[in-house]
Image (tube, rainbow over all chains, first blue to last red):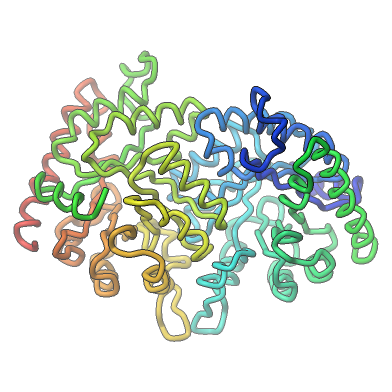
Length: 271
Length: 271
């Protein structure tokens, strides 16, 4: 998917919502557990009910990998069920030396047909660039994450006072463009999103941490939005586990719609 | 596997060789391609012929993941074929926020039965510690890698002149102990291995980059060995692809033996 296509979908749906598919066998409604493939049934119903409001889906690969070989078959089925005009993110946080990263890229972009994959920056250029060689496919690079541990290394300042996440942003601008490179930027620190936006005005951000992790959607939009929206805001648990009963998908729809309504007004305000 | 058991195996085999199973369908001998599971057949023969000299095997997960769901079944079969007294490393370079890292840990430590998994540090404590909660299982944390891109971020100096990889070493000492935490330390810079050894005297290092990537085994031992050896030196391509003919496993055996002979003399010299 191209950036223009993504933006067009954002405008059409008046939403920049990404629904995180953290499909956990221990958390899905009990009545699904008698299904042949409970995780698939769960994701399918979630997708059916939220697709009107979501511009992206983000399966968290760990949840599928933890199920063994069958989990990968489930992931493939889930991916194929997602409507073709919706952006797909393999939240895999991969990254290895060149020839190995190329294999990971093939796994997610060719073996499966994801639009994008999340990638960790620690190993540098040759661990990231192999993912950028696929046409109309995207790297979403970890820059500033929303977890507590993000402070351990990402905020370390270098000799010139520049925090590590800024070095990641600057260096990676040499590797990709706003047409194939996004960044993970956590929502727990509104003003930091503004810092990141100044450094990379045109790239999309994937923003986790709204809702369950405590970030505010209004702050994210205020500090992070650009003229092509430039934001995919993810919500996982707040949508998919809003109810653990038979009505889970309907409740997920209603939670997704709440966010979409808020997003509509933010798009009107800032775009 | 405990550290004592690993060291005992090193003494018994007089070797600290790790064989990297980067099993690539495009590189294995042609005659294997008619087998039901060519990658399994390849790894099986490599393991049979090198197990006398190797104290560890390191399947590179990307190579299996790139094969889709069947690749995970192959990986499971390969893992089960490795003799139980040999240390196993899932070279997966995983790392995500807490509950997700826990799922990755379960995938590699419970779903499969690997002794260890390689983990990326960028997301900090809560991305690493979930892997450290499994008894007799190991994290092998990326510290100083051997690829060109390692210079992009790992060598950035902080305000006190401390490079990032040293912050990773120091901080992670709070998370694990020499009984459950190793580090990836590349072999391409002998003197840097010495720097790392000073900072973490007791932890094992997994050292890639000997052979194909240009590092010297003698330098690694000189700078990196401690009183429990403290080294697992990996060779992948130099062993498994030393021949692409029918004799590939025998040639692999002979290459592994060459390294083991050199390791024997280094163990006598430094231990």
